[in-house]
Length: 337
Image (tube, rainbow, N blue to C red; front, side, top):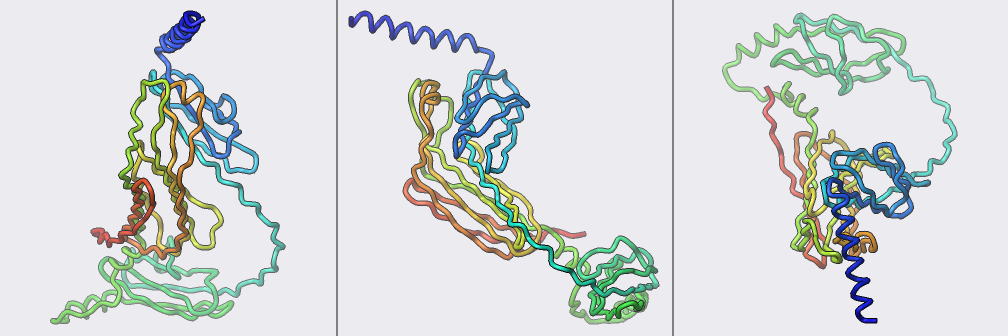
């Protein structure tokens, strides 16, 4: 009986080795989702429901995960010969939108504004937004009431508060040559309240960096053993501008991509930070038989006023027991010509 068991075990190993040799020119993709049961498509073809393992030839493939009641996830994955590429994805629940009864909107009273300048190529900013026209010009459908106007030409700029009456056209005249002569005639330096450079700097985006620092071993190199497991740290950083309903998400993960940087425009933002520690199965057989296990999770809700031309670096640290984060804020002072 003992010899029979040895023979069976030897046969199992031979089958496994034959299988490896059979797919010597192929790789594996292992996709796990939270929650399970998501439909998976790779290169437009269904490969089953999560958790799923599929065999593909080396190369890049587009994938898509869908599950009723959750947002669809799509992306690309690169298959490497004789290796198991693992994707651990979290599906976000769809936001149930409550039907809103339309509120009657009162028509906004509007008027016109004629802008005349002595110089050409003058940029116009109406209530903070650039107008795609240059003086002389008559702007129509300008909101009635006080409007903010900034005129910029080369190194010169001026700001105005213009009252527009309903159904009437107001006139704004600006003499830049007169300003230039006054400036050149001044012998002492003067303090400029607002310069074109400051106006352009206020329109620059901010840079956000999400960085993962950990002292836990998260080696994700190929594991040749049949059974094994490793640690994995995943960070989900969601953000949206105040008043918006759709979240934007950036993900960093130990062993693959531990830092993500992106740009956002200035304004008030809501942010959510979710950090998770997982035990991930490794080795060909363990990947097939075992699901990853969440060990610890950390959440933070953050509200932040994002300023232009500023870098915000969110550093998430993990020492094996506790998660923590800190924010490093730095003025970029980007050169503006």
